[in-house]
Amino acid sequence: MLPNEFAMLTKQFTLPVPDEKTQRMAAGWLFLGLVALVIGGLFTILIVLSRTPYFQEIIPWVDFFRTALVVHVDLTVLVWFLAFSGVLWSYNSAGKCLSCGWLALLLASVGTLIITVSPFTGESHPLMSNYVPVLQSEVFFIGLGLFGLGFGLLVLRMLMTTLAVRNDSGGDVLRFGMFVAVVASFFSLGALMMSYLDIDAGFKGEAYYDRLFWGSGHILQFSHTQLMLVAWLWLATVSGAYLRLTPRVVLILFVLGLSPVLLVPVIYWSFDVSSGEHMFWFMQLMKYGGALAAVPIGLATSLAIIERWKPIPGFEIERSALIFSILLFGVGGFIGFLISGSDVRVTAHYHGSIVGVTLAFMGMSYHLLPHLGFRKVTGRAARWQPGIYGTGQLMHIIGLAWSGGYGVQRKTAGAEQGLEKFEQIAGMGLMGLGGLISIIGGVIFLVVVYLAIRPEKN
Image (tube, rainbow, N blue to C red):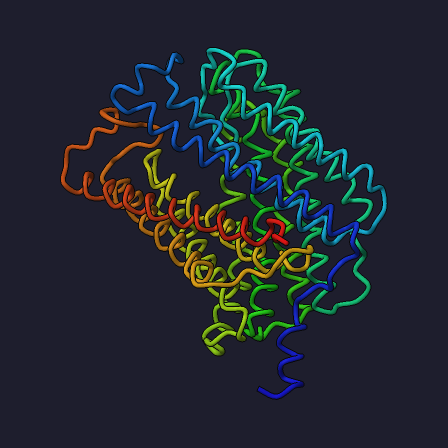
């Protein structure tokens, strides 16, 4: 590879290393996200024990399986995704109002801690509401509220301090993509407030929280998707895949990716929050609007990978995470068009989508560690990790999609699933095996990152 070709490959869509204060801020949000993943993994063990003979008899809480599941989902999806949003946004922020940034991180961290301990403060009455499952306990809602305040303050700070786009270079286009995600998150917070004020008082329990988080949850998916696309472009560039997209075209695609979010006020003005039409149109917005930027950028990135299959030496881990992120997100999106009813194909769809985002964030975690003052991730375990995690999750969602096609319903467990046909049992068996493999991949990720950030012994 010629020197000027290498320079072209490694500078197409990247950002420079920020100053030390910004590095510490980004590292703080990364620590929060990693801690949430670790604690969420520990709750997975509690979920298994709560359904294991003998152990389930010494757990004094009623329905602890769903109680632990609520906290697991909130930590490994909500907290992890929003904390990593804080990583990327902080990396791209100017060094202004740093105290606001640290206060946001403190509030989010304290909220996460309270959410973690909330199941052990008494009966929780879990509700498996969409996007944000909840425990009906005062302690849980205090934690969730503090985390929400921290994230809200983060978004407001980013609206004021995100570095401006000065031209249409690749780096500035990445900055614009991050800012688009900030705007989507701001709309999400506004949607949450509008839903809270307008929900019919007659709704109680799970129906109430479904409607409370429905609009904001859908909008947050646009933010996550935009940040995933930023990660795809960045990981493709550093691993040596040259995209046949000019920065100006990518900027236009980011605008298209945000455009469905601008229709959110129309949905709120046109339909009552408690109505079925309100929920329907948010599903349509996500179903068709979510692909406007993801499909062309995903195709261009895939073509770039095929044309330069061998990554730049030293960046094989980033390339592996990128490939499996695109694969899982694409499969999850395809399954979304097969959904009819409320079977586990719905679960397969959002698992594929969120795992696609997670793998992109894992890849960015590996890449950013040396830029945040830590050691570069190396070794065989790190190179294999995206493949192990991605393959396990692919098996998991294929098993769910297969079982859903034979009528297995979502939000059920044990005998409630009604597994009678061989096809249903085989599909859910594949799902379980894939889940086990992906857990191993997740543990490897946490161990590898821990080894990179722990202080070196003298």
